[in-house]
Image 1 (cartoon, rainbow, N blue to C red):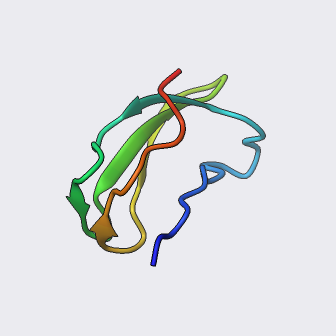
Image 2: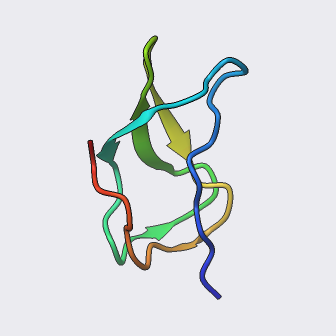
Length: 64
């Protein structure tokens, strides 16, 4: 069953961010803790990781 991955708040004050770079491709298998993407905010660039294991089915949001 597909799971939608939403951009997390990477800090308590984060209100918005830009998906700077995908670190995975459609069809990639990921495990909990694997890095998925880089998010740019007004203060820093941060990475976010998978919380579950599975396969990346379709990337709906382009970089930038």
